[in-house]
Each structure stands twice: as C-alpha cells, then as structure tokens.
Image (cartoon, rainbow, N blue to C red; front, side, top):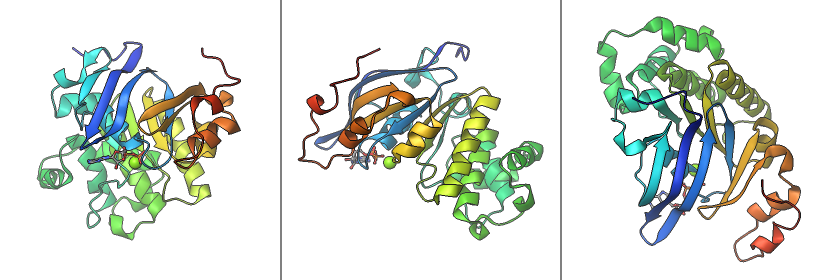
Length: 266
Ligand SMILES: Nc1ncnc2c1ncn2[C@@H]1O[C@H](COP(=O)(O)OP(=O)(O)O)[C@@H](O)[C@H]1O
Ligand SMILES: [Mg+2]
C-alpha cells in the first residue's frame, strides 16, 4: 500500500541517468516533502525533463533509487496505480488537436495510457462531470466542446492542466508549462498551478527556465546544470550571482568558488 500521508513525497538516492556517453542526470540525491512546491531551474540541457521523467517512472535510472511516499518507484504497478501517485504534464502537452476539449480532458481518466489508446478509450463510459468541473476550474467551461486545434497556446496549456486534474495524482510533475506563453499568460498559468496545488493538497515539481518566474512562484528552487544540482534553496535566498553562475556559457567560469562565497548550507 502506498502511504500518501508519508511526509516525504519523492526521494532520489544517487540517481544517474546516462545516455550514450553522457549523463543527463548525475548521482543526484534529493527529497521533496509532501505539499511542497518545487521549481527545477536551469538552462536547456541541464537535465530538467529527464529528472521529471525519472520521477514520473517514465524512464528508469541507470543507477540509484527513487521512492515515492516511501515505496520504490519500480515496485508501483504501471497503469492506474502509478497514475494515482504521479502525473506528468509534458512540454509538448500530448493533446489530440482534432478532438474537443472535453475528450482531451477525459483522457486524464485513463491515466498514463498513451494518447492514442486514450482515444480508443472514448468508447468506454467516462465521468464527464469530472471533466466539466476541471474545465470550469481552469476557466475553459465556455470551450468545453471546442476542438483543441481552435484554441490559443495558453488555452491548450489549460486543457493539459485540466486533464492532469482529472487524473488526480498526488504528485504533479509539470515540464516547462509556460515556455511558449507571453509573460501575462505565463503569470496566469503559474498562479493557477500554484492555487490548484494548494487547494487539492498536492505536491508540485515544475521545471522552468526563467529565474524570475521560478523565484516569484515557488518556495523552493533547485538550480540544475549539466545534470547536477548547483543549488537547492528557498527562493528568497537565490541570489543574482547564483543565477548568473547557473546560466554561464560553457567554458566560462562557473566553478564552485563563484557561487559558494556567501551562502551557508541549511
Ligand atoms: N532520450 C535521450 N537520448 C539521448 N540523450 C538525451 C535524451 N534525453 C535527454 N538527453 C540528453 O540529456 C541532457 C539533458 O536533457 P534534458 O533532460 O532534456 O534537459 P532540459 O530539459 O533541462 O533541457 C541533454 O544533453 C540531452 O541531449
Ligand atoms: Mg526540457
């Protein structure tokens, strides 16, 4: 039995994910407590997507262990059991553009099945009231029967978020939810994500590449670079200098001496 009241939602113990010759994630150890809202911040290639996919059970670590609410991730059965614990909103959203908002949201009921399998699942009886209430919560009730390819980018992000709400996992993993939105829409979406996480008593791990959004919307920021944790701090303690170091171009000074002068651990 997975204990969703366990205080530690996710634990990574020296997790490495290697791809031919390089490590997307290197010997990473971290814990996320239940109810926390954590941002993974870092430049492209830092390992954010890989880390989220590891937490979602979508890719297996090359070495090291991951537990979710104290249960080893590999022991959790794929399908509805895993879908009730972790759910991921991928950057490319995985919506079916030709289908109505309603059907895309209902796909959340089918958990982690592939999108096309979920489309086949439309033949099954579904709980439309759950989809309608999720649509209302993300402000899309007027678009419930509209095809997704007629929606703006911001609206499509909301459809994907509503689908995740219908899936109702304890842990929300959200990859670059605002990468394609203008600042105003990005602010709206991040506020919504934050409010929903609190209202539904969930744990949130999201990735962003914008330091401003990370520190404004999240209580804890983990800076990633080259598959490693450069810092893991309350957002109020993330200094300009840390951010500059995180985003230094390769080949320029970004060694520990440039980022560890003032802050002390703990
Ligand atoms: N499926 C894959 N096959 C090979 N290399 C990969 C794969 N996924 C990620 N990588 C590599 O791992 C590193 C981290 O990628 P990623 O996790 O996508 O970072 P981010 O999301 O921060 O941009 C990159 O160098 C990327 O090229
Ligand atoms: Mg990514």
